[in-house]
Length: 155
Image 1 (cartoon, one colour):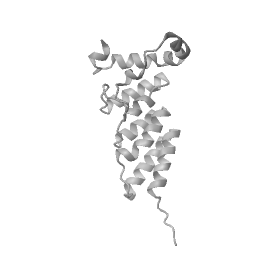
Image 2 (cartoon, one colour; image 1 turned 90 degrees about the vertical axis):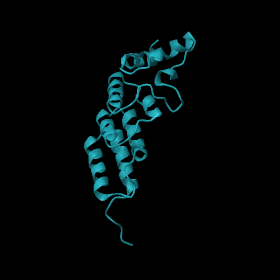
Image 3 (cartoon, one colour; image 1 turned 180 degrees about the vertical axis):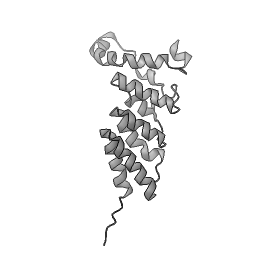
Image 4 (cartoon, helix red, strand yellow; image 1 turned 120 degrees about the vertical axis):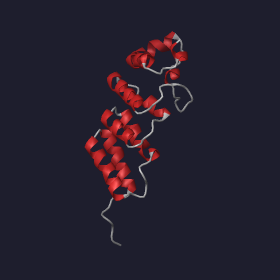
């Protein structure tokens, strides 16, 4: 049986995932364009783009995150948690979320707004985790100062 030279949807989406993971913007653009040109059987829906968006967010590839959001990927509750980390990149990703219609008061998949997942814990625990929590402080400050932040969370 003769095999087609056209890529299968699974191969395209695996390649998109890998390009998003490594931050290869031009490859992501080419794969998305190729998908539109060949009218693959699986449309480029938000759910199809979700794994690539999640990996681009966790890898802190802002330009790929922006591209995928422009192509219709939706921001999930888990994506908010994945965006935490390196402060400059995290803040840029959260700002991109806002630029693409994200509600800063939306809930994570666990049902809480983003800041509520930070537990109130004994000081011995905080002392142990201090370096990690300290690295998130600029992101939390940005979050609290953002327009649209719930007054209940600020007060």
